[in-house]
Length: 238
Image 1 (tube, one colour):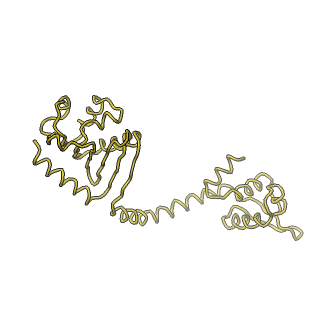
Image 2 (cartoon, helix red, strand yellow; image 1 turned 45 degrees about the vertical axis):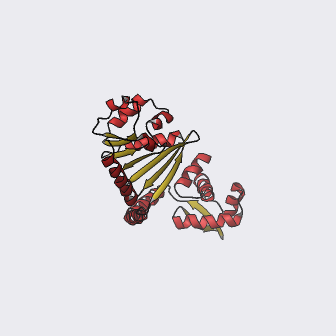
Image 3 (tube, one colour; image 1 turned 135 degrees about the horizontal axis):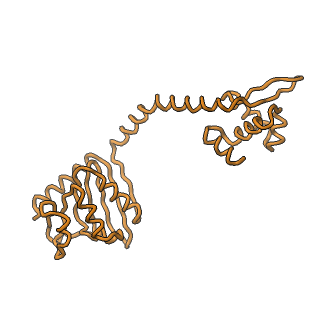
């Protein structure tokens, strides 16, 4: 019974409407008093919800000896509900999407904390088909995520990526990224903070108190500013 009520609620009925409708389907015609007694719901509430069900076309009534009896209509009528909802959604969806697109012109900022969300962001980044720009943080980012460098570097190497990192004695990663794809700056500019830029998205990540902290910014103008900054560094790096 509870499962059926939950299903009816998902179809748009409230709990009281669902209880009443199921009662009438199983018992046939009932008066409001009988429904109230069996459902243990106040009679005023029963009348209010019966009127809603009548307006929805799920319940009708007839009068016998000056007493009003209520009965359920064929459940197939609920198919029409869904068709009506689909038609309404189809009509308003273009306008809703227009509102959403206009809103998204403003910078959209999301803050993530923890390894799982950070890994998800990196996976999203690696699915991007055009160029990705990566600056700073060295390869400590990969270690902090618990990835083997071998696994993650192989995945990152598949991306169209240019990288700027501080100079380091460790050159093993050069077998993953050709010299044309990676440049170095003086180690005095080394930072624990990394940023990635792709499309209209900027990802800024840092390990704070042994926990990964990431900011995701979706903005055409901000992404372009970071790209400009990258290009200035790229031109002066070697």
